[in-house]
Amino acid sequence: MPRQPFRPLAPSLRRRLALLTVTALSMTASAGWAAEPSRVACVPPGVWADSAGAAVEPVPLLRRLAEAPVVLLGEQHDKADHHRWQLHTLAGLHALNPDLAVGIEMLPRRLQPVLDRWVAGEMTEGEFLKATDWRTVWGFDPQFYLPILQFARLHRLPVVALNVERSLIGRTARNGWATIPEAEREGVGNPAAPTEAYRNRLTETLAAHDRSEARSAAPSDAPDSAVKRFIEAQGIWDRAMAEKIAETRRITGRLVVGILGEGHVASRDGVPHQLADLGIGDAAVLLPWDADRDCDELDGRIADAVFGLGPEREDAEPQRPKLGVQLDPGPEGITVGAVSSGSVAAAAGLRTGDRILIAAGTPVRAPADLVAVIRRQAPGTWLPLTIRRDGVEQEVVAKFPVDGAAHPPQP
Image (tube, rainbow, N blue to C red; front, side, top):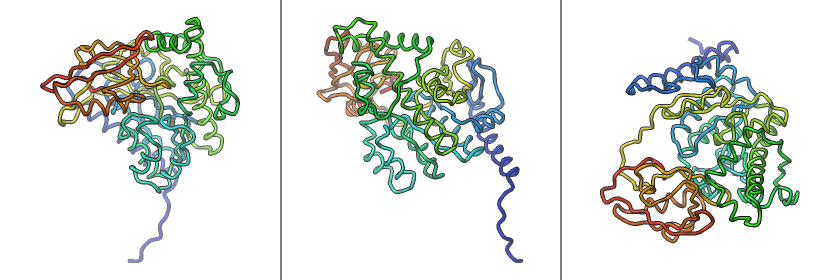
């Protein structure tokens, strides 16, 4: 029997197959939820919900999102399930609209040529991580992000470096945007004024994490000046990423899917606010929703939609020593964002807002620096840490238990 010539699928059939792909993704997530023990959650695992927590059908939602100019996928950088959700959502959007680009917060603009070589298939993973100096530039585990980058390369999707150098944000936080010469601004324009809600949220963040550091950076200034510069620096950071997203949309016409921290997108402040100022007022914001997250945060405006996650499960593996802290990277190093109850960090007296400077004689500039030192610790050993608290350097000692008892899965 003669071979029939290949005929491309009709657009209507291709679209139906794409919808089946999205439906299958949703069913897979729901099946995973059914296998877990039942528990009360704001958003059940495997379920999409609106910003008030009401369940929504995934296929109509993703169909609508696939027609948006920009979709922003928020994350907490150290949570593996957040990155898995980002990959699956990216795949669902790609099934409906293959003409898309991926923007990532993780790398600064100067590394765009490396990303281009990666997408073209000219580098191995190891070569890519070395060329980007990933551990220093970003610091969080590259295994969280490589599946997304592999997906983009497999489909030859443009990947865009959205960020700027940390030093630019740090200089703004210390001295103000006006003090930075035009030639040293990396092409970033003046941001739109932040909303009052965003200003209040950033002020609370600074009070919890960085107020002492801001004061010590400019001791002659009043605290209000430090707050103003901190908010200004965040605005520059948001503006820089928004400008690259808007530029990519304008030049390519593609749907731009942004992979970036939740703090830059929640409640349509930050990057969405700057995008609106750049003429893209209909960017969509999606967030993963952890099982233990406070239901009061579903206030009707936090995102266009959220996706319920189940409790995190760790694979069985040799127990590694863990300090039990959440780390917040910044232009001046890393700050303790939260301390887990009953952890090694809590026993050592670490507090939210402490800036970790040195671990066992090794300078700590990024989360990866601290993680590398901790992983070298044997059970029963002591780890000296130099921290800055309230502008004063001091020493604390983290004592790891002899039995290697588990601690929360933070660095």
